[in-house]
Image (cartoon, rainbow, N blue to C red; front, side, top):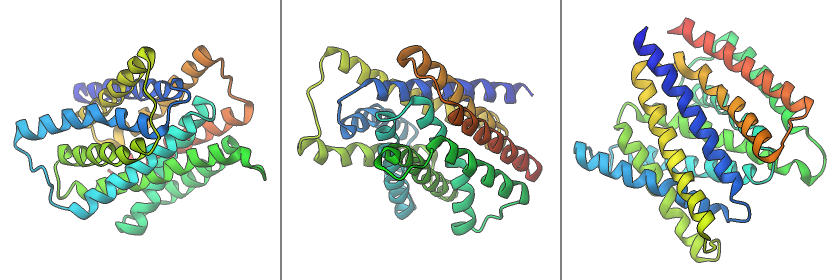
Length: 282
C-alpha cells in the first residue's frame, strides 16, 4: 500500500508538470512549433544520454526499427499537440490529447494481438462521444485545430503502442534517448529553413521552463510506474485535465463551454471504465 501511495503521488505530480509544460507551450505565442519542440526535448536528450552512459546501457538499442517508429510517431504527436495548444483553449487541447489511451487499446488489438474486453468497447464509444462534444464538428476550417489535437492523441497512441512492444527488447533509458534524439535533430532543418526566431529574455526563460517541466514530468511518470502497475495509476493521469482547466482559467481567462465540460466528463468516465477493466484483467 505504501508503494502504491508513492506511485499515486508521483503520477499526480507528473500530471501537474505536464499541465505546466502545456501552459508554457501556449504562452510562447508567435514562436514556431519546431523551435518549441527542439527546446522541449533538448534537456531530455542531455539527461537521457547521461543516464545511459552512467548505467552503461546500449546507446544504439536492439530493436532499431521500432525505436525509430516510436520516435517518428512521438514527434508527430508532439508537433500536433503543440500546434493545437497554440490555437485552441488549453483545457480543450489537453482533453482531446487524453484520448491517447483509447487509441493504444485499438492499436494494441490491431498490431499486438491484445484482446479488447466488452467494458473497454463501451469505454471507447463513450470516449469518442466525449471527443465529438469537445471538437464540436463544423463544416469549415475553424474545427481544424481541434481535429489536430485529436490527431495528436492518435500519434501518441501509436507511440505508446510501440513502447509496449519495445519493453521486451530495450531499456527505458534507450527508448527515451531515441525519442529525444530524433525529435531534437529532426527540428534543426526546419529551424535552419526559417522556422526559428531569436528569443528575447522572457522567451528564453519560458523555453527553459518548457524543457524543465517536460523532463520533470517524464521522470516523475517513469518513477511512478516503479511503485505501482500502469493499470493502477492510469486513472490519475486524467487530473491533468483539471490542472490545465485551472491554469487556463487563471492565466488566460478561458472558461470551457458546456459541451467541452460534458465531453471532458465523458472522456474521464471512459477512462475510469477502462481503468476498472484493466484492474479486473490484472
